[in-house]
Image 1: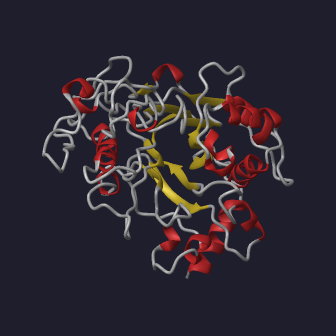
Image 2: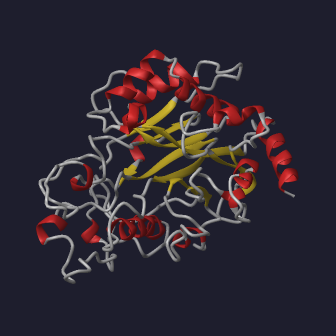
Length: 390
C-alpha cells in the first residue's frame, strides 16, 4: 500500500498542474538561519552568514533546498526558519529567488516567484527582563520576545506565482499574550506564583515569530494564506511555558477562523476581528504532532478537528515510512519523528486532489537531498494540490 501510494505521489508530483483551477501549496522549514552555517553549532552573532551564502549562489545545502522546491514546483510556498534582514538590499528573499530558484539545479526547471513577502518576527528581539527566570537578563535567547540570538533569526517568508494583495495583509506580531481571553496560565511549580510579572506581561507577545494572513489572488479568487511558526513545546522546564505558548499560538489561528471568537484579536495596524474571507490555507511548521509520543492532546486538534478545516487527506512519504518502526511514520515531516509541518485548506472553496511529503526512500537517487541534516533541512517539504471550487 505504501509503495502504491508513493508511486501515485511521484506520478502526481512530476505531472503538470497548470490547470486554471488547480493550486499547489507547500510549506518548508528550510533551516536557513545563521546558526545552521556555523561549525560546531556555535551561536551566531548575527544573521549575516546566510546573506553571504545567498549572494554567492553556490552553497550546496541551499542549492539542494532550491532543487527540492524546483522538483515540487509549488505555486505558493511558506518558508520557515528563513532569517529576516531589515536593512538588506536586495533582500535575502529576493537573493534566494534570483541566485538559487531561478537557476536550474541538477537540470531541473528553474522556478520564479515574482510575488514575495517577508516581514519582522519576534525571535531575537531584546527585552530588559529575565523572561526565562534563570537569574540573568541577557536580552536574547530565552529573554527575547521569541527565542533567538539575534533579531530576525528563524524568520518567515512567502513566495507566490500569483499576485499578493499586499495592502490587505494582516500581521499579528505585536499581539500581547495577556490579551487572549482564558489564555494558558504559566506558573512557577515550586511556588505557585505567576511565572511572568505584570510588567513582563505588558511586553510578552503571543507569537514567537509572527502570525500572518496573506491574501493571494488566484485567477480571480482570493485565497488567504494563514502562516505561522509556533514555538516548540520544549526547551523550558516544569512550568511548561513553551508548551502553553505553543497551545495558544495554535489556538489564535483557530479563533481567527471561527466566526464570533476573534473579537479580542487586534493586528499590527490596530484592526480587530478575525478572517473576513472564505477560502484559506493554514501553512507552516506548527511544532505540534498529531500522533505518537510527541503528541500533546488537544493542541493541534484545535485546527485538524476544526469544522472549517479539511484534514482528510494526509500527506505521506515512503522515506518517512522507513525512517521509524511506528505504523504512522509515513506521515512524519521531520527527521526527528513527528508530523510537525502542515498545509491545511479550508473545507469551503477547495477540493483536495493530492498531497505528499518530499521524503524519498533511501533507495531513490533523490535520497541525496535528505540523507542527513547537512543535505537540506531537518524538516521535509509538505505539499497539497487543490482544485478551487465555488
